[in-house]
Length: 511
Ligand SMILES: Nc1ncnc2c1ncn2[C@@H]1O[C@H](COP(=O)(O)OP(=O)(O)OP(=O)(O)O)[C@@H](O)[C@H]1O
Image (cartoon, rainbow, N blue to C red; front, side, top):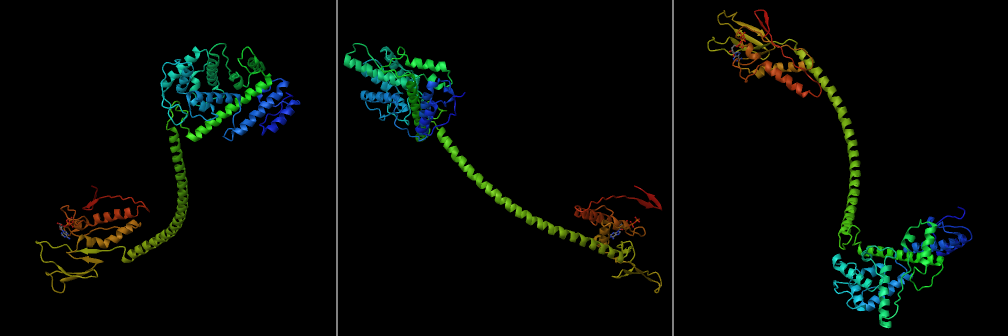
């Protein structure tokens, strides 16, 4: 479309006016919804747009400029007259829509008002604790004041005056122009009162209504051109509009209506924001109808907890970071220690091997075959012991008293001789070193040799009565084998097999 140019927010009225002039010379810029207007309406759109942008910019200041719309002036007029009729209501000189509606919500003011104008119009008025504007005071339950409102509206209708909906008083967040009907109703009561006072209730009673602005037209900005024209016609139709104002041309009227709507809209937004900020949003949208809900306190408490948690999280992160650093340095230290230990273990292993080699070499030097002699204690039935001498070097001298003096002694040489009083442990101690050689891979054989009853079984197995005391070499050797196996379990795994055979009369007997 050649007539359309970019729609952008205007910073101030001068820019808006310049744009409007440019648009009037041929360019059209506007919200999408108004593009369909005819060329002569371009300047209207521009002017409205400029006014809206100016208002939006100024609304950021939160504090409203003095309202100048005719709807606001009518509201101020209605409020002033109300106070003159029923006494002070605590309203400011220029009350906002919210302020205005709040003092009427309980219906008490309205009922008192209409009873002053038309005594007995409302028979039963339910009094309330306070009619003053105060957001902190809890409103009475709906059923208490709803009856006042209903009775008031019935009385208004009886007087053939314009009424409003009871729901118009109940809204928490007002929309632009939502108080228009209420203001109209009160001002019509004012006109009615003056008509009665000055004309004695004789003749026609005229009252002024607010310009009828269609919210549908205002809100549905995508309306078609014909819809808009129809709305304009409706507004300017003298038959349909009961107003004493002069009917302006449609463009000016449109500008004025939109400007007023935007003023009221902005005023209500400012009021709601101020209300929320000053009162901590004591009436939240989840608790419609309750003034003192605790959601705001809960939100505040959660915010505080969240802040605390964030602080804790931040501290925990710092702690974790310092712990990570500490852990890293500890790991480095541990690594170097392990490396040292590894080197030491390697050296130890090497030393152990050398030690074992030397040990086994020593066993070899001691002799691969060692012969020990153990003297069995003599029993009571036996004759006097034949042992003449037991030397520490393994020598043994026995004496046979039956033989001649020269041949009576006979000497023997062993690796070691154990006397009759030697215990099992003493005998085993000399063979124990050979058991360790077995674990290092050497073959070892220990056996007992001697005549019947000389004590072979006693030395190798233990007492014939099966007592666990005085265990023989076999048991003590096996105990040592398993103990060494357990000690070296981390280094090497041993398997132990046991086999028992008996040789009797040169015959191999397997049990
Ligand atoms: N050192 C000792 N102290 C005490 N008692 C012993 C000792 N040596 C052997 N005896 C006892 O002597 C008896 C004979 O010993 P033992 O049975 O061990 O002889 P042996 O050589 O095994 O005989 P065999 O060849 O007939 O089997 C047993 O009653 C045993 O308890």
